[in-house]
Image 1: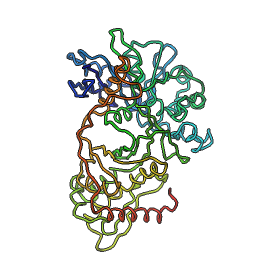
Image 2: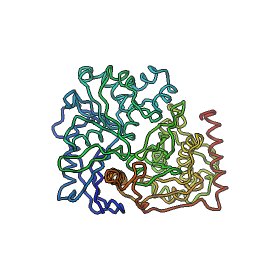
Image 3: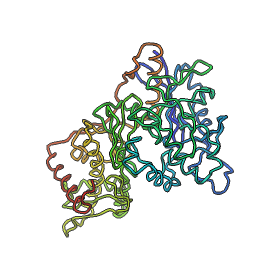
Image 4: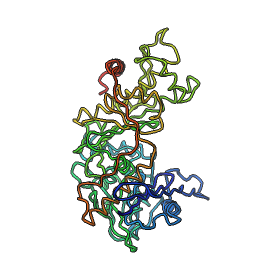
Length: 482
């Protein structure tokens, strides 16, 4: 038996789990929020971050002998971040993290500079957007040209944390998962596009070496093995034990659908974001602009909360008496209708009741996510089961409606620190590969997480009719949207 740790540094906190290498059992846990900055200069931007806060919370989370006996550590960290460093490894400015809207104009200009959305999809499997590190670099070159000219090295949050744990060696590393989210690494070819860095930043910069899934980034002076690390999405997929045939639907204010697939996928219009996972496979992702925000908006309109909205929806029947909600409240990414608005269709005297509107909001949200899943299915991605993540996954209406609308088994995992667990599993893999007890192409087999499982029932034909009603309404109002 060995002991490994998984560290997840999110946008707000650090979580650490210490696990048994053979069983994945969690032996100890640590947590600490990132310290809040004090005395910030007036006008400081919320997406400008001092990464020293990550190290401080890491140290606090690991206190009290939490890492005693640990042989290897895996690191997961927030995605969409970039740390611009000078030639000596010092930050030229605070790290750029999160869904930073400052790069919106720069992202649009990048799309045009390469010849459009299709060109980007073919080049790196994604189209620039404001949160992407590449767009952040283009913004930096415009807004802070002096700082941009000093940039010599680019790292993501997980790259930087691994580098710090190893004592800032000359060798800098990343993994396929982290690299695939930058906008300048192609999952299809497995290689960087330095020309795209130059297009955005105005000059070249050194990029981390991309490690394989079971590779180690190095060993600390104390003899602690550090695995390659990865982004939070990829770590969570590894922690959930996802494999081919599995998809994840994330229910936040906006939504996302991703699936494990054997090859990189792209789509000419940029609906698919091609990511690599932490196991050697791929994670094509389709994003929607609207998910739980459609439920919250309806709940506010009806003077209730999400639990009350769920209870109301269950009093109605499939199809909501003809009401169809196209939940495009903030425009929509899938289908690509950025300037549209939501639509409520099918209003009749007998359908104008709170329970029918409540049900239409749940059916509309889920059908919008089925649209996203169908983008992947249309490219040959096999889906045998769907994992639902997010607080809304626990709502009875979601659990009752999702199996019929998705047409597949629905899995709702119990709440857990899946990104930290995935980082620990990666650490166990790297340790086993180094010791010769695990193959470099096969991660350790850990038990599946506790979960509720829901299957499509005998009323599946009725749900097919609901889905057809939604598609017919969407095509009538937005013909040719897909």
